[in-house]
Image (cartoon, rainbow, N blue to C red; front, side, top):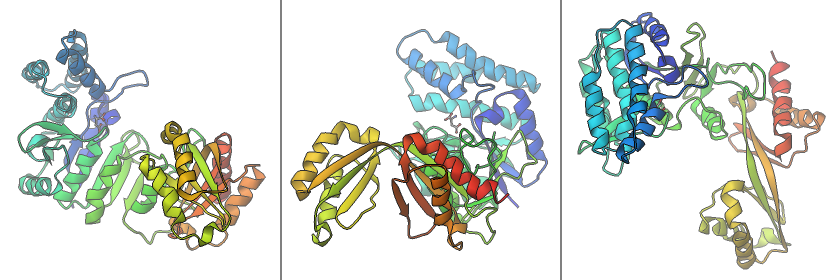
Length: 439
Ligand code: ASP
């Protein structure tokens, strides 16, 4: 059994957290490959080392004073090393980093040092081999991740290494320039390593006990999702539920390797298991609810629209011409409505309306702003009668007016459009009818 374990920044923010991490690793022999993030925040007011590195580089590379920020970074590692009583001196590493900053080695190089140094500390603390991600994770010259070269190199390198620490978040181009993934990218490294070694499990350790059925800022102490499929996760993540970097899904998904989201501060909690498919019945009819505010709808009306071939295409072409992507497109016989992100649309609003007039000569075009979309997601909905009925009666009881309904043919989700002002109330009503009642 082989497991890849990735630990997020808050799991490695201090010596105390490192100790918890070591306990977790040594308690299961299968936890052989460790992917650390950079030290994160120790409390709400604290700063992430990655952010400090960006700031420090910005100052150093523009000739501004940077000594104080660099000292802050040194102190973060110093405290961890001292707290763990390690015989490790990073002075040489810091001298090299400073030199590279002054030589303008690049923002990505700067940010990557958080993971690099934490990897050195972690490898020393565990007694595991350290493998610099720059030697095994590759990007092409345009900065696009090179999955094939990485998989080959990582697979070969780790084949004969029993236990190793591979820092997350970065790699290098074939010519040796350091590149990072986007923020939160250590999740991606973990997934890539899991794929390369054909892991049985990719454990992603963070500071929450898994994905929650709903946003805890709206629902107090929501239930944790025990098992979720990649498709369900994608729907929820798209609608704003975030725990895992989106790109972390693809490498393991293809290999059928499950991801287990776990909580470093509550290691006994089982967390959420993310799988390709499962026979396990979800605990509730729905798996999760997520949503976003800030949409706008454009309603186009024209008598006999339904018999006009190409009508929809011509309308959508106008949005495409302005680079605006649409979210949903419910339609009636003589109407079609396009939902777009308000922030993307506002700038082009009048041009788009004019464009629609020119393209299809509608009877009228109407707009409504400040709308929210809520996705109710669940593989269990497919087999259950009356799910939509329950959602809408719950919303009616909560006095929420439904502006739009869209059920994908997968029956995996129902999307509901409401006014921004009704957003929280609507989510509460849906949570209550499916989760509180079914508990
Ligand atoms: N340290 C990086 C960040 O803060 C990457 C990561 O933590 O995954 O975004």
